[in-house]
Length: 146
Image (cartoon, rainbow, N blue to C red; front, side):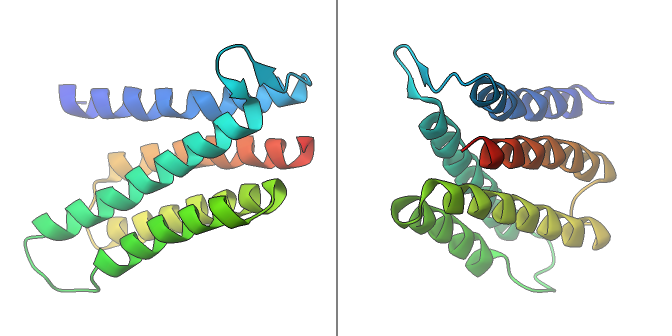
């Protein structure tokens, strides 16, 4: 494993901790943290940021794609980012939580397509599967704690 791939692995793994931590806090009926606010707001805003970040990765991948063959990721990346923001602004807490679960699974499906077309490496996809599994598990726990 190269230094860059180790860093990617560690950063992705660390990125799942707020999801896991918030889910645990909600299971323990800890709904508010000093200085940070409502735990449900923390996990929702964090999810919103991560989805937007992930959508941005697809935009970047499209811009550096060596051959422009295959479907473009520009429109899906924008649609994902805008839809998660719209859901955050308009949906109830349980509906937004379900929206995040669906969107994270959609992002993983896109990554699967990118993996099968050799656009992303096996290691990157493997890390994404693990991270998405942890995030989706956390969000399911949050959903049932609401």
